[in-house]
Image (tube, rainbow, N blue to C red; front, side, top):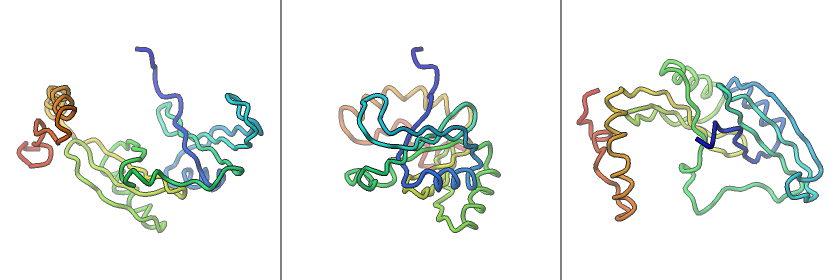
Length: 178
């Protein structure tokens, strides 16, 4: 494979310090690096920024840019708020539920757990308006194998019809015993 792993994923933030403090406090991430420049290295544009990096576990890095000279950040109004999100894996349902309780105790609104059959998730927003998902895998090897068998056929059917294929309807209709 050409790509070894994701080096980092970067989002914009309103306030770098507030963002780092929030991720450290609520998601137990470690603050690992800060880079600040007055000029963008790739484009040479004069645009001061603070670029902060957080350890999201297992070599995954989540980064943010604070851009004080740019217009206020906003979201893509042509995309529903539930679409663009960052999903982070947790080790168990116990951790998922404990984290939900901890977030709610801190006054953060949480949706879920939502049952996706092969994983269960909670959803909430960070202080910048980015939607986050915490997911705990609950699928069986049989479930993953069934999904693997139909992925290309589903994609092809979707490409032709733009309608949800029924190849994996068992995920939502309860027909596969769990």
